[in-house]
Length: 554
Image (cartoon, rainbow, N blue to C red; front, side, top):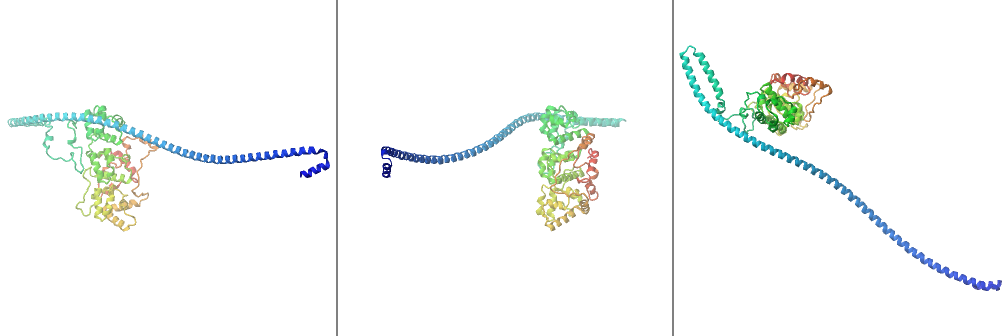
């Protein structure tokens, strides 16, 4: 190429050969420099490629680090949420421990109060022991005086009779002497009746038998308490002793600080009982009010002889032993049973409608038997076909024995705690064989067994009661008696407040079993009179009208 160039240069311009040579050399230098630059640039490109590879690897590494950091962050968040939940649980445990600590402090305070009460009771026992010793000394002195008085009376009587034979006016003188003898005997012979039968067994005292017992016996009264003295004139100690005997001994300590004499209780209100005596239980206040009303009216009720221990055994007899603790805690006695209301039973946690009717019919039976503590029959007698007047006095256990007698022994245990007794079977018109089958858990598909029960039930209650129950069930508006129905407390509307203002406090009480002596003859002829007013659906207004005129009777 250069040769051809040289030839061309020589041909065209032979004079400028030197300039071409310079240019050629310069071009060759440029070529070498360009080659050098290319090599340098190639090295730079290679270096840049290496750097790019390094950056890519570092980018991948940083991406891995970023992923691991995100995973760590997620783990930290999970750990934080678990810590928050642990914090909340710890707060709950701390609050529970605080409540437990407060409860323990309350129990400790209660324990100290009980300790103080125990100490006060020990002091009272010592005082009573001293009083008993003093009374024994007085008893010995009275016995000595009694012997001396008897000798003197015999001498006076002999003198009077001799003088009566010699004088014409002996009759008047003898009468005078006999009167003097009686007066001296009443003044000096106060302990004679207590000593004459000291070694004999007396029913009604404190004994550990399973039968019912009475608590209003003369032995249970304090010897210092003279029942002939009006209650308003009783001393503080006599009132406190009476509260102890009456089953309200837990209020004696506060009563001793508040009461001056019996008049303090007679003039007090239920709010005063709650404030001054700490009597928070409403039935305790009612029990005290009824007793004070009996002192005021001086009406002796047969039901007042039945104490709260007898009532718990009565609940066993009528088939409701599950309420014994509530009745015992409320100290419900015979007098309170006579004046129980629907709200009282709800306070005692008796919410079943069937149980309300059971208690109502049982109270009717007590009314009919004048609150005889042994009126209910617990064991089978010699009768082959009992009459309704006998069935009405059957206890829950006796009804179970009847089920065994009619070949239904396997279902008899189901009546425990059901409230079924003879009074409910006879007196409640809504209680039928279907109700008894439900209580016995006899399946509906066992029609032959239910038919057998219906036949035995009709033979038990009698033709008249069966007809009345059938007519009552066919009446319009009849609501069948179920085992799950509940009794709800009555709510007063605005229109009833004006009526309450016009009534007396006792007239507003809706007794579960109104006192009606004219409707309590339980026999085969007038049993329908007992049936009147037992159902909550019918005769409700009649019961309310009868309450006003009958609360002071019985």
